Image (cartoon, rainbow, N blue to C red; front, side, top):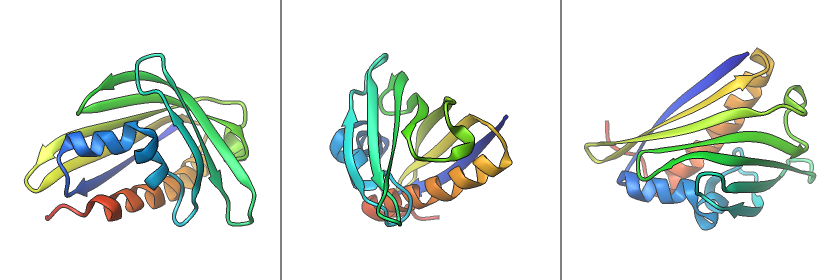
Length: 148
């Protein structure tokens, strides 16, 4: 199994970024790779609560991810499981991985560290990296890049 770590600097304080990570409106605005839209987002950001996010794909199809919140510690940490309801990365079919968002205050905003662990292999890691880079870039575009 392998993991993925991505870091972004965002021109918003951690509480604002945390809201974008943990609310339906926030998630709907930026989740999904690159220019792919979120079709629906349901988020119950509490320990034991769940989420379900559906994305449209480039070919007009859809895929959906869901999971359970394992840690909700505003404004510094959010941890959840990640699995595909349908569609998504074939390497991960029927599997569950873990996602962690860590936030820390920096001059001019926040540093966001994204970690996805327990991915099946390097092929899955590369696919998830491309998707999450696009999504996190949308988040940075929405809230602004932090200096430095």
